[in-house]
Each structure stands twice: as structure tokens, then as C-alpha cells.
Length: 125
Image 1 (tube, rainbow, N blue to C red):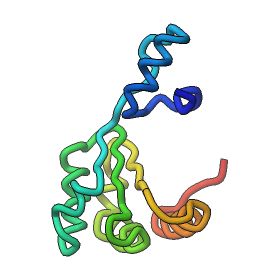
Image 2 (image 1 turned 90 degrees about the vertical axis):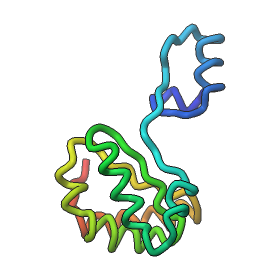
Image 3 (image 1 turned 180 degrees about the vertical axis):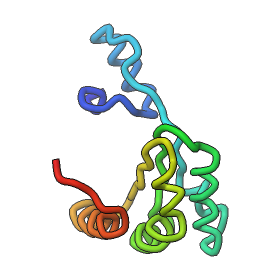
């Protein structure tokens, strides 16, 4: 429920139910298309890029989140998202969320951001 103070996307039904019960919040959270480890690993390591491409093809617009650390998050950022699928990512009408679910967040996110910045560019705000 505290996550919903700052973010509207969630798959935690209990948080929405309690926000409604205690704060009369109404609709306060929603889900987005997202992969999970099993939906990536079921394709096998040799088809990891096809699994990601499938997500982009199935959800060509709006937000889509892809867990990308099932095998190697840095390879996924550097080679798959940053090279193989780069043009499809750039040309889609929406935002791709590349999601790491493991490792030390300070280390993993820092290295991911460096890789993705070098592949896609960015701006400070």
C-alpha cells in the first residue's frame, strides 16, 4: 500500500484492497504487461532475445516490463536490448522497462544505467 503513494503500477491486489478499505482510494493501482522469469527462461538461453522480441511484438504500445536478469542482465542490456532489439525499442510507441530482479541494486543499477546510456543515450533531469 505504501508503494501506491508514489507509483500507480502494481500487481499487489492486497495493497489496492487495503488502500480502498482504509483511505477510500478508489482505483489506485493498475497492472502493466510484464514478463516473469519463467516466461523468459522457458524459451531457453539460446532464444533469450526471441523471448524479449516476443514481448515487444505482443505489446507494441504503452508500458511493457521485461525481467532481464534470468541469464545475464549485462549481456541483455549490452547486446540484446542495446544492439539486436535497439531499433525496435526506439521505434515503439511506449516505454520499455528493463527490470533487474536480483543482485546488489546499487551495483547492478549503476552498471545497467552506464550500459544503457552508452547504447541509447539519455539526458539528466
